Image (cartoon, rainbow, N blue to C red; front, side, top):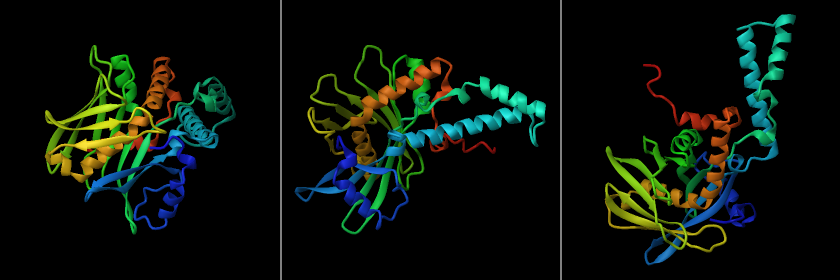
Length: 301
């Protein structure tokens, strides 16, 4: 993972591969932030690229203004409907609308008041002739807020989306009394079998070092270098049925790639929680695509 992805030469190669990519997961706001090498046939070979959605991780002023305009437009429409469900407003009703808009907290927001940072990492399998999407890891800000409020400390929540895997794999940081290093847990479905995952950061290590467990058995480790220009991790897996499950390995690869961003993620969580506890949850920007991950499939029942 690179500290300055925007100026890294691999982004030129990344953009060139868009022309031949057989996936719609490449977007105009995608930057290449790292590469993944796999040990094959006695040597390391570059097999994957990691991309980040820059429009949600570091939104520009234009993007923030657009988000604010959309938010305030929806708020205006909601207040208008509360005055009159449909049709044009009378002069008296328009005056009431303007008065309520002037007193509304959302309408008084500025671009700097919004909390919108969210991490979305995507993993792409690359060959000399083909580039395809193999997984996405998204920060779930909606879960982070209430989990952090309940535990009184910032906790990270993420969701893994993998091709040809029907379920979403959630990785949730947990709070343990008298334990400072993060502990993540999750549940991964493989051919109808649910595997319970535990990812524990070591108390003492040179860099972010995680021990990985599945169903109570040690699965492997993620070893991060203490000093690197950006982030550098090694994923080592032991002999386990999940270690040969390619989608699962891709999920762990994305989690390892997220380690270099977690300090910034914690800062974002603290800002969102602070806004929520102050009664200003409207400052927290929640994207439609995140809400879709919380979709109730039985809503029509």
